[in-house]
Image (tube, rainbow over all chains, first blue to last red; front, side, top):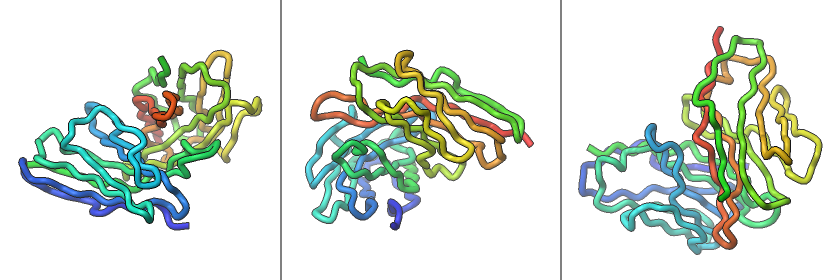
Length: 115
Length: 116
């Protein structure tokens, strides 16, 4: 099976702009979770989508949003970018239900730099 | 409160030796999975090993094994015959159960350096 893919791998944006990141999960996985990773804050949970619905949300401002499509692919959007949004954004997919629903598989990440 | 704690921020080990990374968690649940993830310098998070809480036998994956102490809520990762490629950040993870909003929760991670 193909793994989780994320596009783009690298992005450079300026403050105030908006950005969209994409994640394609492993075939058969219906849940996609997004994380922000920074040296200072570590790995922080953004949100999870399951069957096109946001099932869980972390403590991030409304500038961070996401969606999931019927094929389970997910996008994450950050509007009005701030310098502090510079981070590695990871997406992870899982079955989303059943005993092993929390077993997540990660993509390679998108490195976002805001200048 | 349900938490995952990794108290050692950094560890170093000589190549070919054995190292143990510690993790404790807190939960009132009885049936759950625990995970260890590895993040090498490439930043790709890789699932290393999983442990089912209702199984008494410790999980093993090649050179990686766990020491799972359910009563003590301890979940350590042992790496045998350490290799240079084991240099990475290691995260333990545990599902934080909050009803419909359950999610996988990660510890702060341990940076492991394998010395040649």
